[in-house]
Length: 168
Image 1 (spheres, rainbow, N blue to C red):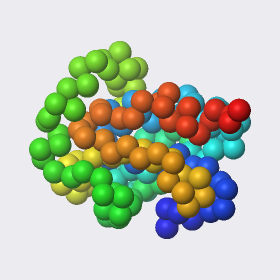
Image 2 (cartoon, one colour):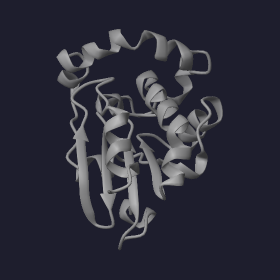
Image 3 (cartoon, rainbow, N blue to C red):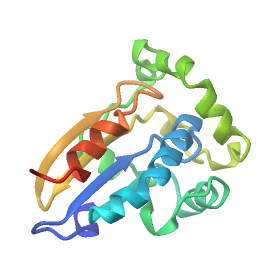
Image 4 (cartoon, rainbow, N blue to C red):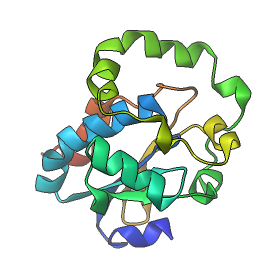
């Protein structure tokens, strides 16, 4: 169970649910998360990235991006996505929220060099799944953001401020 991945009393976890392992925009998000991992680690925050697809598809992203495999989990049946009520469907692929992809060409170009279509889930209906980012402290939900479209990810500075800024 996803809740078993961090200490349930006081442990802080950032749980990033990627659309699927073959989503280029999710490779861009995973790249940003990886670049911030040392900040998460120094604040005692557990980084957990989950993607739709098999462990083999997760391994493709982990090896080619690269991304730390000990922070990456596969959810082939989209169970965590259903429990957290994340958006699903064709209307979420091409909508206003997805227009932000046009602002990310530089970041997408950076991850494109290692990207492969082989990471797309075998169940093609899985590409209709949207992701989101959640921050937990133990069992308490501190932050929730459900992506409304492709590339509509939570601002990373918001996440870092919530979980990695010392309380004065």
